[in-house]
Length: 212
Image 1 (cartoon, rainbow, N blue to C red):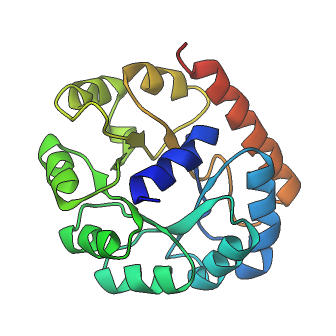
Image 2: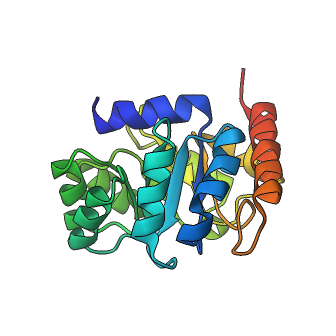
């Protein structure tokens, strides 16, 4: 299965990415189960979390039905580390061509962060599977609509940063295909029960914002 097909399959279930920043290996299985029970199939552990590769390895083993990987990936060498841990997803806050190319070489899904049309088109040329619009706090729905107008029609566009229940509908109407959800879903110290409820709430909200 190609990276694009792998991501398409995972996001067909629910086009939301769980950003588990600060996750610790000891809680990875419980928090992962909470998110997956909530219907989510894409799980990201940022590399500035405690021992992130151990958490990625735990999640990848425990939830083979999910696409698991790393966020805040800044260097090509980190791509190889994530792959060795069992991760198949690379997410970055920026567009670094060598990170994208390293991901492509290893057959991994890669979602670089972009903010301009120039970055977006260059990232796609480098082989990006989709685009993370970051930070969404500074990129309103009108900007997503304008960017979408110049991108290839099948480009996956995912705003990340400051996405809440209140603004998901506006971004979706502007052309967003899904979202990355961070602190509104998980914060260090949150119980698995609380995370599961938030995961279910976001899934229900997405259902209400999806166009028919």
